[in-house]
Amino acid sequence: MKKSYYITTPIYYVTDAPHIGHLYTTVAADILAGYHRLIGEEVWFLTGTDEHGQKCEKKARETGETPQALADRVVERYKIAWHRYGIRYSDFIRTTEERHKKVVTHYIEKLMKTGDIYLAEYEGLYCVPCETYWTETQAEGGKCADCGRPVEKLKEESYFFKMSAYEKKLLEHLEKHPNFIYPESRRNEVLGFIRQGLKDISISRTTIQWGIPMPQDPGGKKANKEHKVYVWFDALTNYLSALGPLENNPKVAQYWPNAIHLVGKDILRFHAVYWPTFLMALGLPLPKQIVAHGWLTDSNRKISKSLGNAIDPMALAEEVGVDGMRYFLFREFVFGLDGEYTKEVMIQRINSDLANDYGNCISRVCSMILKYCGDAPVAIEKILSEPCEPRDAVGEAIPVFHNEMQSYGFQKALEAVWKMIASVNRYIDSQAPWALAKSSDPADKEKLKKVLFQCHEALRVASVFLLPIIPTSARKALKTLGASESHSGDAPLLQKSGWGQGPKEIKVEKPEPLFPRLENKA
Ligand code: ME8
Image (cartoon, rainbow, N blue to C red; front, side, top):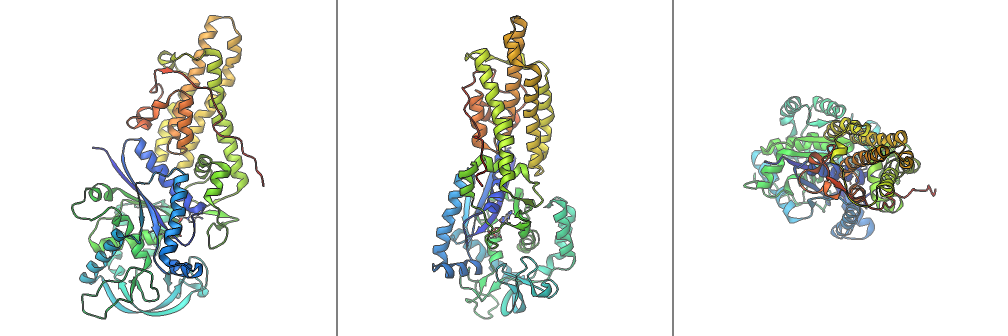
């Protein structure tokens, strides 16, 4: 049976159009989904939008729309951006959909019955933009521990979730599953937080209208129509509600045990503490892993709409191209760490790696093949049976690439691919095909063909590896190389990416520039 893989992105707030930070997480998920598909696994890839709560309500007031109209409008911006970037999600969930609201209500009813959700009075320091309560110690100097903005004193009747009851169980889970939170530095932060003691948390709000109503309290206490479900408990449930009903649902059985939540470090605690304890209370299995990445920053400040430094992915796609962006984001930055975004570095990276190294190399090799060997198909099986430098480079890169892709080391995986490409460029320089072409010795003619097709093979393998990362360009490259079939069929990343596993006969096409050189207009 095929292995299954379930990858999720956070569901993004519809308060604004997507920016480069949202793009970062979504492309990461798309690369992982693509990679796992290409190694033959069955993949479910979920993304979507978080449409309830105070933030959306407030934004709608500002824009003079109903919250639903705001959500309907902004969700299109997300869908258009993801389409533009070739994001191949399996499902897009919106928290205002019936399928989602039903599940949230059902879970809360269930926990009201077991007593894991109860009514009490709450007084605390609240950060409106983050929709989070803080203790006096957490909100040092009256500032939100996350965003640094002032907190407000708020008192309200609220439903609480008995998170404290699951503290020990959660710690045990983390100890038994050291990879549950990735990377390790983030795991340690979460462990530190849990060890300070988990308190029960408020999971309803009376201060908002725009949310899922709390269901009727079965204890016969006060009617609670005015209580709305706290947006985080609404939102987190999307990862399960999107799979459909829990009982007798093959999709849940297949994918839920393999769920991987990809999130930014800003929302790790919700995923690594709130969500697992909520699932424990419901008696449900936990996801397999929670992976937190760093932030893209601008002058060392998080890039975000509210800080006013957001960068529009649609404009970037126009300016540097979709694959240029996809490549840059995962070659330039270490996935778990923050990364400073600058336009200069981006343009430099795309020009040097994509236009010069990769694009030029394909164009050079294909042009020389057409020039020196003609355009009839060439049988290459025998040629590829011999040792050579590009072959060694391919052999070294393959295990590194797979290891890194499976441990979120995108940067190192790409470095491995670029080592193959560099070996081809070196080999061309050392073997000087143009000199061999001038020789009248028939042995040199044979050698010329050999050198060119050895280079060709390393570029074919590199392009197969690049399929999940820069899908459109890698496919175009394979077509130029006359090896399109290498990416179709079963698990091409396993079965077609070894030396000599491509087509037995090659007919290259006239190369066209894969990546035009970019100018820094600024
Ligand atoms: O938090 N660098 O939604 P959101 C990298 N609705 N990634 C960034 C980023 C940056 N500068 N800025 C944003 C929410 N992100 C909730 C999630 S999930 C059940 C509910 C990415 O629209 C990163 O993935 O504020 C971060 O966690 C997410 O966008 C926050 O998106």
